[in-house]
Image (cartoon, rainbow, N blue to C red; front, side, top):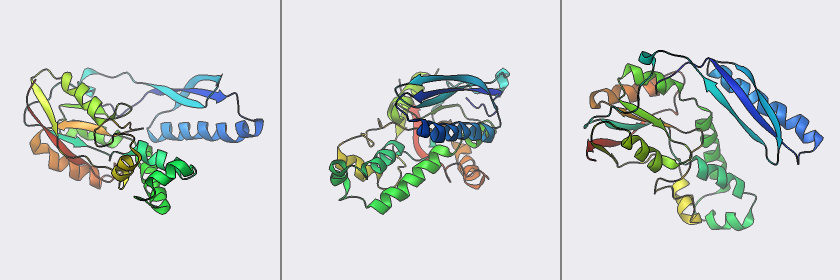
Length: 247
């Protein structure tokens, strides 16, 4: 919605009851530090939160900001002729799972014909970089280039999130997606493993990209600005579709 500032964050942390004392002392401070570092990069601070004991390690939080109506963009003003732009490549779920499969012989045997161990490591690092890159730059540029709507692509995959965004539009439009930028080799892994449905658009993304509806005349400048920004928002942005008259 075009918000680049955050007043404060609360950290919600669950410690696993199955962790040893040594694991607890080593792992949890690093998780807390990572959360604080991410908040600092986003220009805010952690001002409180809650810690609980759980079967699993979980970390999350709540980000809060107070702002004026002119500071955010309602995600419902797309018009026919707009262009759909994606700010990071897809495939993080596949990359993370493939990296885990390096230590699982049964699963690794299914995909080793399409990718090497070295390639898995390389693309895993690419996925880590993308997930660690904030959407803040692209969010700010939404105002500069008069974005009409946007959503983030996360757990439901690009298909479900784009369908949801299309349904929010005030005008009768349809989104037509004709291009999917995907981390190298992730399509091959998805097909070889028989999992994820990456090409079907339902593979989950973590810390995903923004899908932005931009006026056609603004797209080239938006993509150029993303690429040249000091944050290098995933290095580039991709045109993935158009907005047509529809239902």
